[in-house]
Image 1 (cartoon, rainbow, N blue to C red):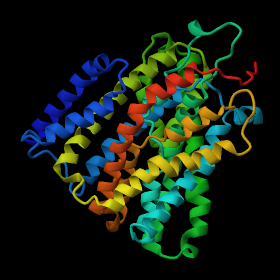
Image 2 (cartoon, rainbow, N blue to C red; image 1 turned 90 degrees about the vertical axis):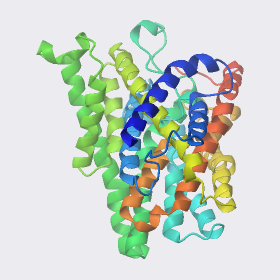
Image 3 (cartoon, helix red, strand yellow; image 1 turned 90 degrees about the horizontal axis):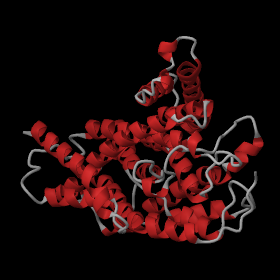
Length: 437
């Protein structure tokens, strides 16, 4: 019965994927909002009886499905970014300034604030509070499509006098942040695991700092860059015609690349999420304006859409099938505080202090405010919670699942309703920034 229901849910997901985008039009309603609502309605009927919904009994399934969804999204994000990043040039790093600020300042501040609130306000144990902060800190590359870049710019779309670049700082910053902070959340999840299993910071702190925080990040990025560079050399410049898949336009190389990069990163003991994003960036850099990138991006985007919709539909069903039973007012307060106060304030501080004044990376006040506000939470949080639950029994608490599920749904509704009108208003506003050529 359970297997048959999976087919039913998958079929409904496919139908929604085809129909809903055309129905919502310019309304402040997004496909994720529709899917969660539809899932909640299905949950009130006898249809999902026997469907595997309990996160305690199905933790490994949740972990692997959400892991795959995030991986596909990260590949798409890396291919979509037009703005280059040359690790050897400071000027190139500077154009990514808002992204580095959100990663180095806003994300740790968010983790610390949620953890402190969880410990002081909700009475959580320090390790559980830290885990909750880490789980809810990353913005999501999966659910944030309405506030991200549309896709790679290819040769036939370029202005002869304009280099490839992202001119929409809000979309570029939110996209690049989401591509990187999923992998950078892992060190803090490990910190929570070590705090729960090994006790005092002095016992594991130096090792965590050297390896989990620095070493595994570097290894993950290098592994991804290596895989992306090798695949690009083969696909674009191989002496053997059979290996030059770009000439045939075979877009499934994107799937092969993300799986290979993830496997290589994990085998090297690095963070595989970072490997996938770095692989996509390195592959894109090989022939930045080649039309093949668009074909790859389209395949990845379609796969991502299907996986995301399936996850959201099941999440909606779970909401009315007991996922929120353990939710209390402290959990509601934590979720809303994150979305309305902690993330916006932490990101605003990160972006407003000594900002870039002109050229790529420069933002107006309204752009900073929009970037700070749209910290979309989503599928990545489910993955990290499921992963941590497999490491420490205390991290399997129903309350944690209730709070994370509530926060994701609140983010889907809040950010989904406001994304289009806010970004439309920003696009219509004059931009006094000077553009560098």
